[in-house]
Length: 232
Ligand code: TYD
Image 1 (cartoon, rainbow, N blue to C red):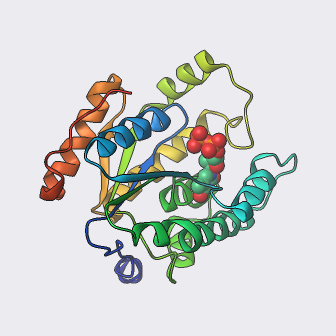
Image 2: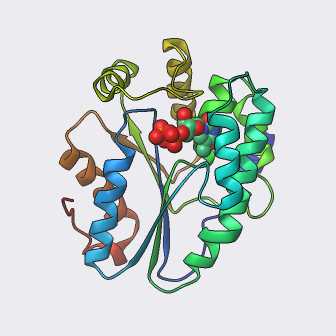
């Protein structure tokens, strides 16, 4: 435990004045895409440059890795998965996220990040959260967002929303209830590890969820107090 705490101390949020990095996390059906679009238009109203990126992917190299994993017909070893996601992430940070944040008044909004690797590979696929944290000890992988919004829904809600969407399922989406329960417990574990990882009740309607996210932003960042929910 002391070792894990020491490793957690090595994570840092970027320090480019006036620019912010926010991440949305959650299991399938948690509403990340809708909420990322809400945040984008809210920040644009305040004249921020806003960039949305998704993981895995976001670079040419990352998109290849995305395909390699999500369209795989064979089972990939969880350690291979963890390295692939971390590779895609390192490239995205180096090529896109950090250079963009360096520009004035920029908001980077990211769909999934390190916390997905903790939940999916660390807990659901059984590597253990500590191993995933160990993989992320070096720059640029030790960069964490200013805030991460954990859009929490129950496994039942996730399955119900997936059923309504009726989309083809990828490598992870086709797994059963036990897998999803483990994912949830992996995300819950992040609440105890990272003070910038914020619980959001995503069972509420869209406006209710956005309002909670804005409340968390206002509380932590007084210079963003004029940010208001904008419907898209
Ligand atoms: P995606 O289609 O982007 O799913 P979603 O719309 O739910 O975000 O596919 C990403 C999948 O990859 C998703 O099932 C979660 C998984 N994943 C991991 O297993 N580990 C990771 O580190 C990341 C970033 C994603």
